[in-house]
Length: 296
Ligand code: GLU
Image (cartoon, rainbow, N blue to C red; front, side):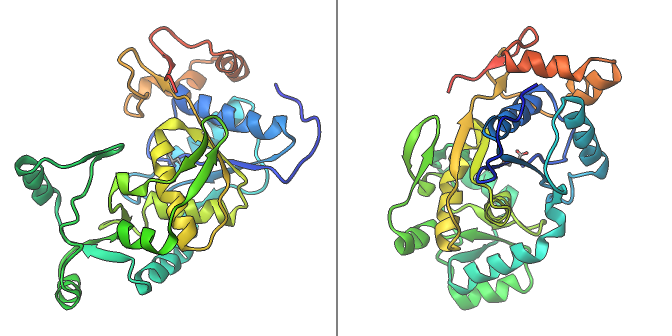
């Protein structure tokens, strides 16, 4: 266990899991990394449940997260934050971006995107194929009329946004100064078709609202930070320091996934494993056979 040597509430760190499945050792590693980062510096550690994906998030998963963290010996400051209770603030920010003409409705469906992908070579971004901007140039009146009757999401016009903000940078504690390159991800979705808000907008707003000074999270989210930095500039939010640590991967190098319940922390708890000992092993980078750290 790390002991708190001094109190420095200028440092505020969070763990922000999504309750769309049971947590596994990869989440435990990430939670401990963020927790130790905060506590070793005498900082605050907050817990935010990112439950905006209405179709996939479940209360039972959120309950299991709290039990998992307690089992690992992790405590948090203040009340647990639930993003589902903050939908108004997300809608307000999205409206602001719309008013500024930075969002456009996109009517592309999964199947139309599949066809486009088959027929055109799409640019490959860090998170997969980049949306080629099909709906970006739609006539405003036509788009408005279609939006009144067709399902659609809202995308961020990255080029236009960057035209307003100019060059943006951010700092990663492990990788140094970064120039934000949101264009590499393309016009990301800000308001999904079937959810109130995207991860990108909600997390950016909440990190500011919760006074997070250090966003400590897995390197799988490194590319998202380019978008978050842009949103901060557009919404006049502060930019925290970032630390993107290695993540746990399997034999094939793939990030551990939530799909196998058998590998969950809940199962380890049910099997009577000692959580503090499990945390101790993770802190020393001792992992079960077949699991290792990604190479940053
Ligand atoms: N909710 C995100 C996830 O579970 C993580 C958010 C973050 O750390 O920025 O993958």
